[in-house]
Length: 629
Image 1 (cartoon, one colour):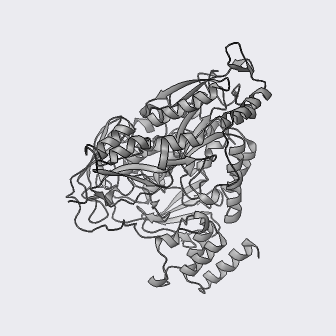
Image 2: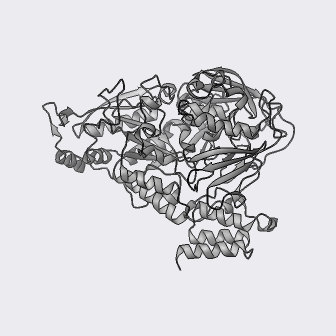
């Protein structure tokens, strides 16, 4: 029996009430169904099957292959062992983000640091928890297929939480959701979150607490807009005069008003954010801490030391520290290293445009191909020169593993036939075949241009060691690598006036880490999309805020992306995602190096976290507590 027929039969039985939710999950797992398919089946079962038939979080979100269900849940996620009680009373929470936030409006930044700092005071409609369940935040409930989500995928209707107030006392309503869409999709706003909303036709206010999102084409990822880090809702009454060209002039960007559990009382960009408890927060008894200080800057090693050895901080984010350095610190006994899945992929990005030719006041212009990387054999040779196992084992330890893939967060969408190899002999042969001849100084020359490449990344000891390993291997190929390290505050700032950001990419190679944004990562794949270069590729006209910063152009990939973004058949969608990953790997659009886990360090006093790969570390900071309080 075909998988389509099996799915249809299972859906019919679920709809007719002949199966419990638990039975549906078991059969779906046996069939290896993907997230959208399982969501549809669970929705067909309804929600009144009795508590004994309701699957646990683990059962509801662990179908075969590790796919996650985006529509199970419907209640607030509660970390194990959380206690009730009155809000406040747990003192100050001291956080260290060694990449300091520079703006507190996440819709105007490309850096995780700014999304994290914004999440303390701003909130989306919903988030994915650690079990990949959608849980409501500003939404009153999670829509399901046929109950909020249109059967044909043309729209989703959200019912909003009532009684929520902005920090200045104004009421949160559906008008704020509609305004957020107007704000971030205005072409002159140049919102860095725009990619999540490209398929949204309109946002319709039904009443004060109901909003309908209409899609341009059927959207299997209906849960992308207004969900997660890029879904934070903005206050219409504060920003109505700052849509478009004036967006970056708003005082809100540095002193925001939100609905979150804490409100900003002080912000020094590139240094520190100070928050105080929101006494009117909509969730009774929360938050538990009275004050948060998020200190930025420094480096990952000093941040780890402040938590694990000196006790100066309670939590430090994104600890990229070699195991040999981290383990002795943990032995002090004050804190612990915490790791969880989905830390993204450390990648070597290839500039497919020429960073040394200027066109109308900008370099790395998409119409001017790179003199070397336009030849696939050169890109293949570079991939063969990356000693991934040495990098992973030496620099990341339990924090990562060698990979040939560029997306490693959703197992069902990761092809197992894409592999990597370290082979300098084969790399040399490919460069010879490409016509890259060695000059008198031993450096190869191709298309009249010596192979002297600038390789940039953020200041970080692990990344600097990574650079050195690549540099040494390339030297054996007759390629001279010049290393460049940029302060993370600048590199990930998204500042349109600074040439050293990831979006400008005024270098031949660069390295950073990013991860899929949801179990249906269609928007993550926009990084390779170039159907409309003016809007899809980073450049001066869009203030370098587009998704495709590599200037990669491949019509075959564009066709696949256009298909998957509206494919409602879960099996076909999975096949297309697998094709997309194979294509970007074999065409060497960029080079996957290390599949990372998320790694942080935490005081043993801090409890109540529910860390998830799909959201900010601080998405549930309202639940954090100090054990001794």
